[in-house]
Image (tube, one colour):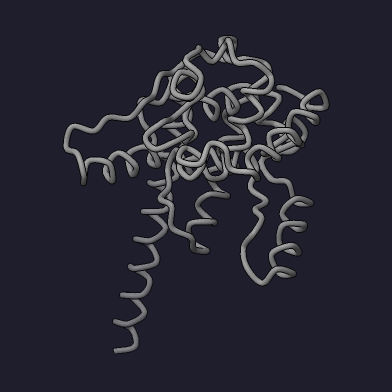
Length: 232
């Protein structure tokens, strides 16, 4: 009986290891593909599209890929200072930022700050659901390590700018620029870029509340810090 239990446990462990290796291989292949090809849709985009189609079967996302050089330097600088000031220096994780966010959350007694880098955010958006769990954070960390190994910083940032959410069904810099300002991503001014960067943590909320006091205040903070940004 004990031998059967041992064999069964060993088989389950072997299956779990095989599934883990298969999934990481799938992730690695996708990342290699995206080094030279733009994503057509991400896991996060698909989840949003599914929600939209619960109300409207014909719903579509606003999404248009544009190359890195056709995105305003103002937006690049704004996103860096707003989301990940150490992006060009770290290897996927900002440990100091994570610790500061943890201390701030403990002080407030709730989650009010996050320490995720641009690479971590992109890993989540490309492959994972929006649920919060230790398992999902572990998957995010593994994907981030693979991404930082396979892609250079400019490519990571290029994909990030093209796929992050900027409103209800609005994804990427080009769609956001047209949606909010009627211009291309290349034509965004410094102030427009700063406001878009300020929207990133709560894009659907700010889509409906475009003149919220905190949004306007944060826009000015980002605008003042933009000259300090280091771009990949």
